[in-house]
Length: 79
Image: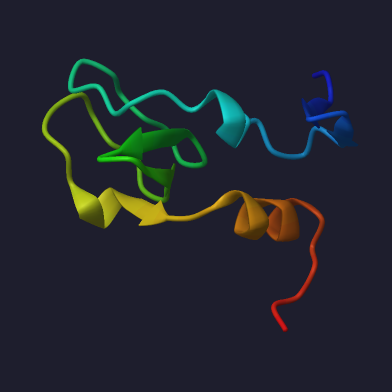
């Protein structure tokens, strides 16, 4: 699989998730896999449990932001 590039920073392809910068708005007709990203009501979320197509279920997603995702992808511990 190819590497993931975010704003000219390349990460090894150890995470098949979509880059947060291309996360689309949550769609009830889309099934989400663990590590997929979407936005919901203007907030970026990472899927933490497989989510079948249907209504929003906050227990399947964790709110995040680009700083957290960069830290996670680079294995930078929280300070």
